[in-house]
Structures are given as C-alpha cells and as structure tokens.
Amino acid sequence: FNSCPRLRGCGAGAAAVSHSDNPLELTLLGGSSATVEGRQTAPRAKLTAVCIVLALARQRHIYTYIDASYVFNGLKKGALKSSEGVNGELWVRFWELLNRRGGRASVTFTKVKSHVTDQQVLNGVADPSETFSNELADKFADIGAKLSESSENDRLQLSWVERRAWLVQNRLL
Image (cartoon, rainbow, N blue to C red):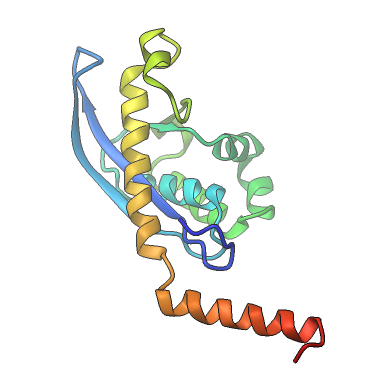
C-alpha cells in the first residue's frame, strides 16, 4: 500500500467458504483477487469485491459477509440513488449483477465487524466464522493491491516531477 494517493493501488478480495454444523469449522473453497478500476479508494474496492462475488457465485442463494458500511448504505438507497452518486458506474454494475442472479432475494447481505481482535471473538462480540471469512477476503484484497502497485520507475518519476514543480513554485528554477 502506497500512501501517495496518485500511486496508491487498492485491491478487491473475496473468499468463498463452506460452513459445517460447527461454526469453528470452515473450509476455504477459493478466493479472488482483483485490481480496482478508476479511483483507488477503499469504498470502490469493497464494492468491486461484492461485484466479483455476484458475478462468480453459482448457488441459487448466497450469503455475503461485508465489513463496509458503504455497501449497506448503497443498498438502502436503492438502484437509482446509489447509481447517481459517487462510484455511480460501479453501482450500476452492482445492480445489474444482482438483478441478473435473481435480485435481492437471492443474496443475504450480513454486516460484519472489521479488524476484530481475538479477544473480541473470545468474548462473543464477533462471530468466529464471519471474522475468519472477512480476514480471508482482506488477504485476497491485499494480493489485488500488490497487483496494482506502481513500479519503482513510476515512483521515481513522480518524485522528480514533484521536486521540479516545487522548484518552479518557489521560483528557484
């Protein structure tokens, strides 16, 4: 992750797990990592990850565990309002994918806590299987972010341009 907004690359990640009767027994079925198109922001990354799940899942009904309030706020707004706002083109894609698979009735969206500690799980504040699934998705997102990283050459060029711009602004060049 690069702190410079012009060089930062965000990744989208999703993990598919199967549950057993024991909530502590999960099987990782697979995962997906992707780069994020357009502006590199966390909300775009989270929404991209949900779009990946909607596009790839083949089960009639799926359960998604999401730690992003941004996605839930968009769900509350509905297709028209969310598609007119920030990341509108990505929201259009989201609603198309959701409708293609059968609409809202075909997906259960569950809000989960992010960055949960082991102590919170032990205290019962967070569900262990949801926490594990979310952490797996974050790991896949990290892989996507690494795919988006700028090259060393790009970082050096930007640094050179910024130094030159500073010199020009301060009338030193």
